Length: 162
Image 1 (cartoon, helix red, strand yellow):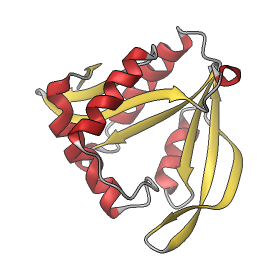
Image 2: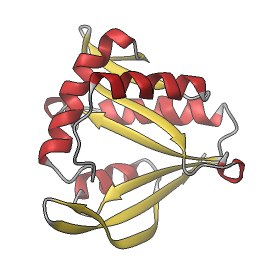
Image 3: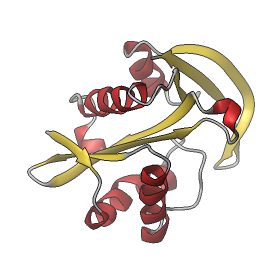
Image 4: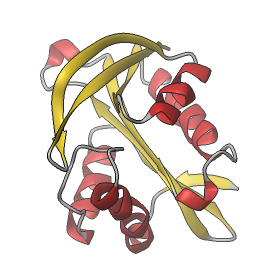
């Protein structure tokens, strides 16, 4: 497995990985599947803001992706970032997410970022454990702020100091 910056030619594979999580799981509270145009804009936005959008690939097949952006808008949040990491179901628990997170955090630290944040669905126990294994700490639980599939879900906020 290798990691590199995303190319616009990767968009179809990124969408194929991301949309099943949106459509079928509580991994994200987003209910609208990603379009090619949205992913293209996201990649461009991350690069324009000095961040990056990475893909993990094996034999040139995209198996996961990661990006980060400012936690909230405004200059007062410029040292706090929130990330997204999605790994194709078939490749979970093989170190893909860990490799993506390592590259993502190193990149952010090189840009003087102080903290990396994760907003995790409380129903996504494996993601909470994943982040804990990578030294993220639970700092808050926001009750019933997420809504999907007719269900209110808690959001667990986790932070890693870089």
